[in-house]
Length: 135
Image (tube, rainbow, N blue to C red; front, side, top):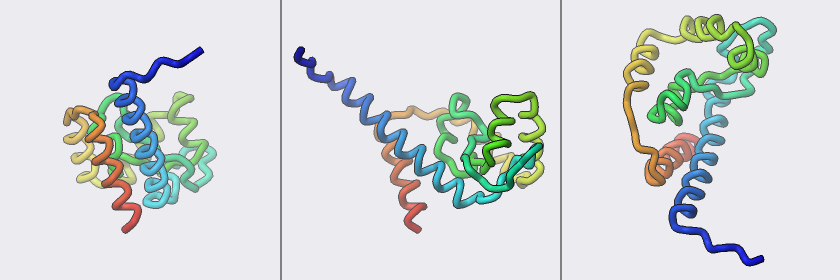
């Protein structure tokens, strides 16, 4: 059976998804470099960052999606505790206490900014992250 050719909307969506995934992988890599030690300090913390986590969820702020200031380095155990146990509040409190007042103000201010996540926006964010990686 012959496949139908993709519509321009399907092509656009596929490009956007691919670029988003590439930027996300690059963001994760940079968080592990910037924050090599786990910031969660939860029960069973292994101490080494294995995952980048968004302090402000992606669903709450696309503007902070690829912002490295919104990235938190977590070990697997603290990342699991954050998502799957009742200890998320403790982990977040540890993170906030380890950061500056200026950081918290930046996060609070920028989490309110709304953006349109177009293909051009993803390309710009990917290029910014690539430039940071290469410096």
